Length: 213
View 1 (cartoon, rainbow, N blue to C red):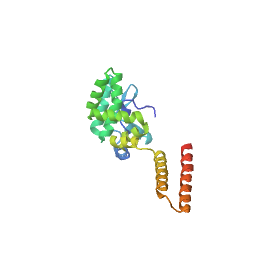
View 2: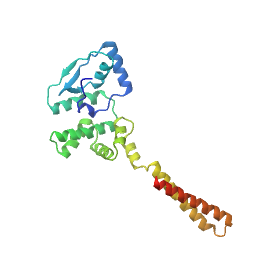
View 3: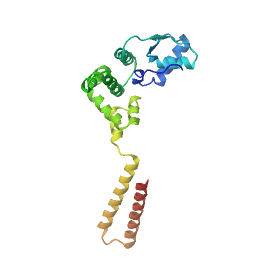
View 4: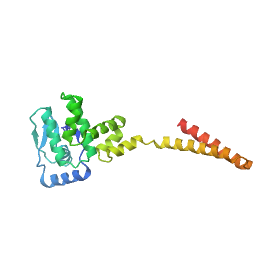
């Protein structure tokens, strides 16, 4: 492929499998009838169409966008927000990146947040929450961008202990419970006491190994 996507085009997630299949079927049947828009030598709009044409040897046709960065960014946002089926969380994720683009264009932090939220049609609070998710985990943020998680679900994932942390907590809890039970047993048969002490010792070994991992 001779062309790369423009950074403004990458603000939006790639088309999903169903949408890609619909576009592919139309192009294979009717050709590429919608122009691919270029700006600064890169694809501003039509990346999915371009890749399909490239894969299937269909001749695309191009149109140059004439305008500045602000106008090009507005063009991308307007087209994609209208035709894409995006969740509110995805819109918030887009707004986070849009905010940074607006900062590059001279907006203040307050202005960029308010304008990004307004353009993406999402609340400023959602944008701020998404910023925190992205700052904490790019992997989790990408799941929000791809529509696999809501912001609330992403926040729960980030606030939930890992499996390793949870296992250690349960081991320590079991050890404490056994020690308390042993204390309360008083005059229990020595065999039972010895068995419980053995279990506690085993838990100590497991916990130590777990910490070494």
